[in-house]
Each structure stands twice: as C-alpha cells, then as structure tokens.
Image 1 (tube, rainbow, N blue to C red):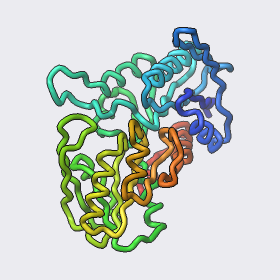
Image 2: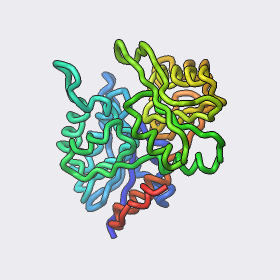
Image 3: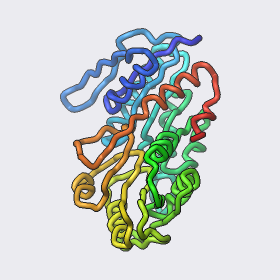
Amino acid sequence: MSIVKITSGRASKELASKIAKEYNQKLVDVEIMTFSDGEFQPSYQETLRGSDVFIIQSTYPPADNLMELLYLIDAAKRASAHRIIAVMPYFGCARQDRKDRPRVSIGAKLIANMLTAAGVDRIITMDLHADQIQGFFDITVDHLYASSLFVPLLKSRKMENLCIASPDTGGTRRAAVYAKELNADLAIGYKQRPKPNVIGSLQIIGDVKDKNVILVDDIIDTAGTICKAANTIKELGAKSVRAMCVHPVLSGNAYQNLEDSCLEEVIVTDSIPLKQKSDKITVISVDKLFATVIESVISNRSINKLFEF
C-alpha cells in the first residue's frame, strides 16, 4: 500500500480538512512565506519522499489560487513524491473551453498544459463546465458529478409535481439527466446575451404551471441568469422555484440578486467556500465523495458506483 499524504492550498483548506478527516488523516502542514510585494512561496513541513500526494485546491479567482496549486505541485515533485494528484473540486476558467470568437485564448487548455508541465500525474475534479476539457489532458482525469449527491437529496424530499429546468440551452443535457432519474418534467430556458454576465431576453420552453421547479446548473456567477429564469418561471404559474448549483462562484451582486429573487432555496456544494452566509443557501459537502475517490485511486478500485444514483 502506498504512503498517502493529503495537503491543501489556502483556497480549499476547510474542505481539505473534511476530506482528510474522512480518510482518517491530518493534512500535511504547508507554510506560506509571503514577500512584501505579494509574491509567495509554499513549503511542505514534512517529508513527501515516495508518497502519493493529493493536493486539494479549487482554482477560483484570484489567479493566486491557481499559481499556489502549481507551486505546490512543483514543490512536491522536487521533494521526490512518488505520484502527485491534483484534486480540483472547482476547475477555474472552464468556461474558456473553445475559441468562440477571433483572437481569444482557450484558457482551460492553457491551464491543462500548465498543470502537466508542473508535474501533476492525475487530476480529480467535479462538474467541469465543458466535459471535453478532460481531453485537454494526456493524463488520467477522474471527472465526478455532484448529481450523485443532489439526486438522492431530491428523492428524499419526495416533492410532488416536480419539474427540472435548465436556465439556458447549454445545460439541457444536465437537466435531462436529473429529470429522467427523478421521473420529472423538463423545462428549458432560452436566453440571449449582448455581452458576458448580461442577459438580453429569456424565454421558458415547457410547462411549469403549478409545478415545483428545480433549476439546475453547474455554476452560479452573478446569479443574473438563474434569478431571471426563476422569476420568469414564477410568473408563468409555478408553485415554487428552487435552484441547485454545483459551484457557487457568486461574484458581484450575486448574494443580493439571490435575496431579491423569488427563489425559495439555493442548494450548492462547498467546492468553493461562500463569501457570506445567506438563509436561502443550503450547502452540501463533497468531502465524502472526494475521500471515496482518493481511496479508490490508492487501492485501484473502480469508481463506477459513484455514477449510479
């Protein structure tokens, strides 16, 4: 059996502590030396030689979170770690997965190249904004889905007249999976954006009247889309509207937008720590999910059961 070391960057310290506890371990201590200009240098406080090192870090903004992960990978490699596994509950820049207009970068591919160049051997992540990002890597990517937590939760609530809705056409496949598993109706939002984070118009395709509607998405950023979809669905006669989202980016006026909306509840994971508390937001931890995958990686067991609801 390999020697397992679990560590974390500052962005995911709380979640990493929960994962390590589930694995019955303590986190490897990392000391961060910070210079007066903001430059920083992480240092492991125990030996990693010959170990399988799991580095837990979500790469949401600022860019320092990504740089810290790269530094931690490089430091582990130079400390003679046997294998280095980056556990990225939230893979930042995943919305930059293609060249959709002239003279733009493909940020997700660049990050994949940087992680590989730093020396990572494997990636464990959850609900990528675009599934094809797995193909940006020439190393193993374990791509998990929070639906393995969300679907059982919804089943346990036994809500009547349930309708699963996608706030935009890009999330149709995700919403369809939920609807099938829950034997629920499906509705789809069609939106037009004049520019990023700004919604021009939004229409709902499907019958939501007298339904308990659950809007499902992978990311809530400014919450503009999800709130406009919720308010539109409510105006169309829905009995109740809730949202279920994997990654609570929640930037700008997101918290206020959620408070002012007709959403009764917003269910999220702790892939990104919340900036502030809200009575509307319910957080489900992914600690057990990632601890199970870490154990499976070490013991070379299949994780197929995690894709069964």
